[in-house]
Image 1 (cartoon, rainbow, N blue to C red):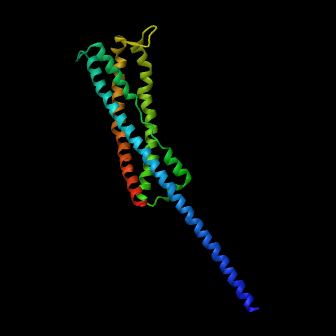
Image 2 (cartoon, rainbow, N blue to C red):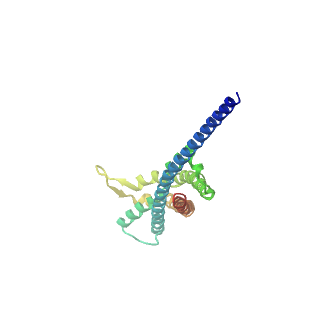
Image 3 (cartoon, rainbow, N blue to C red):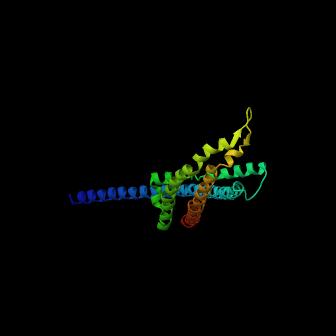
Length: 227
């Protein structure tokens, strides 16, 4: 009788140990799977950040070009310089670069966040910068894109067709000097220049600095965590 009880206890212990080991083995397997998937997520996030950086640098360059063109247009309108019509057309086209806004890539972060894998990152500093970039900075960009469109894109959509008139039976346009010389357009140029300077000097450059810092941190984490 006693021998049977010991055997039963032994069987129960073996079953318990088997279940426990199986549980730990499954947890270990899931941890390894999440770790490997997180690695893929971080590589994708890093690629998105690189695309963001390239796009912001491109937009910053184009907006700077537009600001210089606006300076020349304002000087011409105020009769402080004289340029030929071909040069005016080139300046107007460059002025249109001011409409550029930044539309970030964020799909990889959203996938990692929605899956919960992003929480497996052990570096709290990296987690903080990720959150700052993809939540705070992205929201700031989104809001300012709307303000930028209201101040620049929409007014230009009204002025440009009147100033650069499409030729009949042609895709080409010709400059309407009367519209160019209007005070309303001169005032609009001041607004465009001011808005563009704020957008590139504060929104783009601050977001770009955060993106560059984040890229450095992501690459360092990948190198350290996946030796």
